[in-house]
Amino acid sequence: MQKGKKRKMSTFLADGFRCVDSAEDAAKLSRCLARMEDLSDFCSYKEKSFEALNLRPDSSVADVACGLGFDLLKLRRLVPRGFVTGYDISEEFVAASRHLAAPYGSVRVVQGDIQWIDCEDSVFDAVRIDRSLQHIEDPDLAISEMTRMTKGGGTVVAAEPDWSSYQLASDNPEISATVEAEFRSTIRNPVIGRQLVDFMCRHLEIQHHGVHPLLLRSHSDAEIIFDIAQSVQRCCQQGLIENPAGQIFLENLSRRSQNGTFFALLNIHVVSGVKR
Image: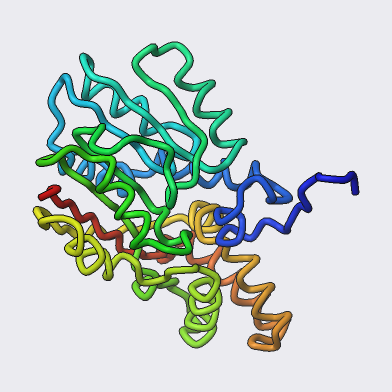
């Protein structure tokens, strides 16, 4: 290994999103984010999170932990006379976002840790974060930073999953529960969705709280987003599931997808608050 070169880690989704630039297969993370963009329930909760920002055509808005930058272009359409700034800690994601935003002069992308953002106070009319507090060491500090960046009377919006709501339909509920628990255990803040109101009310006046179910009816979609096969593999490696039972479980999910009885479910909480 060359001196100074980062050691690449295996790319289990929950681990990978915590440190994208050290992931062995960063493309897997990008595929996950890209697939979400095409799913109706993801689009639905995102629209609600955009509405909660209370944007005007000339608003300034920040998307914190902006990932591949898809939402930067959506926000730009909402603020045609304003400007959009994306922040992300990952070099790879920042490069991808800058490439996507390059044709638009009113969109910029900055590399930075959301817990210590290099930004002056009271810059933006609105700031949002989407499914990233679940991976961050100190969510309260991140929300504090987002609030600091926001003008008085401006809006902060967060959308986060509650992984205790994660369900996989199968013919073996006990194995489903084991696999669900394994994935949940890898999330740094697995119930951040239900905790959002408590975190945000320390810094903001709560304006909106909605809960949006994400229902996936395709095993292949759920595999991309919930890393099911690797979750089963981890369970087998730890002796939580026997190898034959794990393979039978995966085959059952595939059959259920083919006959229309498969589903995977997760609830997303969307909370907005106004800076006092």
